[in-house]
Length: 429
Image 1 (cartoon, rainbow, N blue to C red):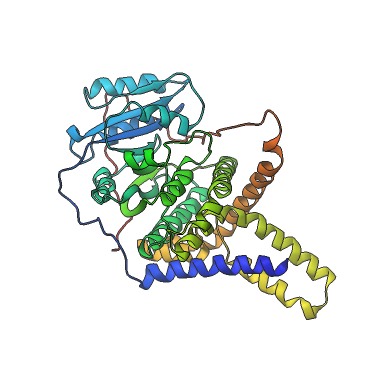
Image 2: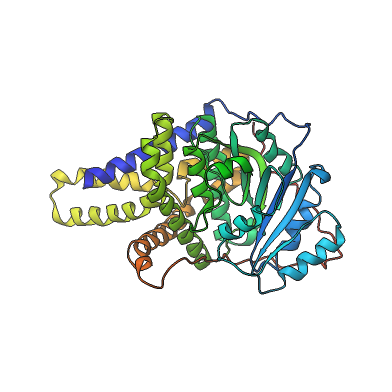
């Protein structure tokens, strides 16, 4: 058993080292970044919203100021059964920008983001969609950068980089900023560089409608519709592109309890995708061996937390029950755990690499605190796995979507425009 745990930790550790070294010294692929002017295709932009009265106005107003041609862009806020002032605020913004926004007020139907997107997709007539969450604020050039890769007919989905905008709120938001940097700046871009499996994210990503339809459309029985779609597109022969310069600004959790609930939802959705697509991925002869291995390791990242916790328990048992002659493997295991996965995708050395690439080196002082975030994430993920294996199978549990709390509050009336966020942390090539 100890050997299996050590093997898994070794594989993931080497994976993080490879990604970090690639970002520091390897060839960087930004194949569509040079497309600045073109005959841009029409696109529908979904803004997923459920009780988002505090943030929906900011998102819509920022979308009014992007540099994509207004006549080629349909903005559709997907107001999914909101019970607060979300509809009122959307309609007020619509009145200020006549002809620019086509709201979809969904008053019934199956709960969940994927179900709402499924209904909204049936209403559009464009060949492409871009999906945002309501708390996200796009940079000025974001839509153009997300649409550029679609000139390649093999591209089925595009993912941009997520940057927290409420970094200065407290220690947690600063740690999440580091985690996001490692996960996108290093992990996602390295997988793009190496021709592996970039992951489509359902908060700042684009989809080709024909690709979506070819793999069965939105599945409304999943908690992580983006991970599910990533692997259905991969198995269907479509490429997913990560664009590191397509930045969008998000609101990260400012409370540890909220963070734990968010992690648990992501973990359950990711593990659901592992069960559904892991076997088919490993057996797919159209994919290369390295691509299949990377895709499977990406699916398995949330299973590593229970394995790590199990390794800790196993190490303690060995410490008190075995002789020093056989204690060396346990000590080696502890060394590996000290450098193992942090949060979702990033590792400690990936975060340091990302800080260096972002040229914001003051943030490195927080690296010692990231172990705190790791412990919280590991406990939340392990709890989610136990719930998924035991409690979620009980009658009456069913499908449950746990909405993330918002902290931003409106600072302007509907008549007062809010300036467009345009600050970028993406400096390096």
